[in-house]
Length: 158
Image (tube, rainbow, N blue to C red; front, side, top):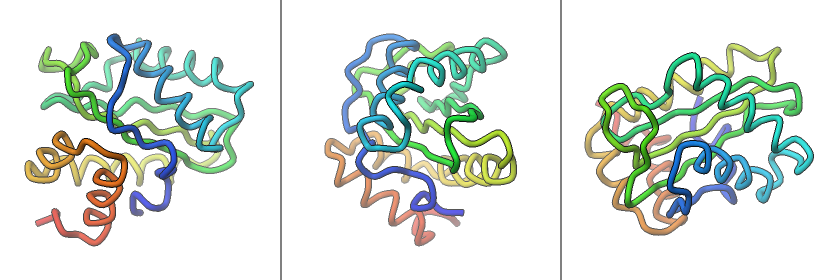
């Protein structure tokens, strides 16, 4: 699996405006609505599902990274987005640090394999410090998309 398989290019955000966890989740889900990945009427339900998932344990995995995700019946294929926050957002991360990089995923309930493969791909790429550093420094949507393409071409994986 590659980022190109599930990241909606029009949803990628170079600067998250939200200042808290729920606001960031809502902003990322709305970016998927704006990009045509989900219907506007499904936005609130998806936000609630992601927040419910967060209550089980934060998807703030440390090193300034969060991967909020959920399975939801409103999507018929895996969709996702990437966003950067310069200031960082308190996301109840495992290391108690603010989050600068967000990878949000929504998958259909009947496609757990795709969901897991996408999480695995994200996790593998995020292990590379250069990829994370360049992503955190990306200040435009185009720069983020270029990095994702490079990652898909295995530039960062050792």
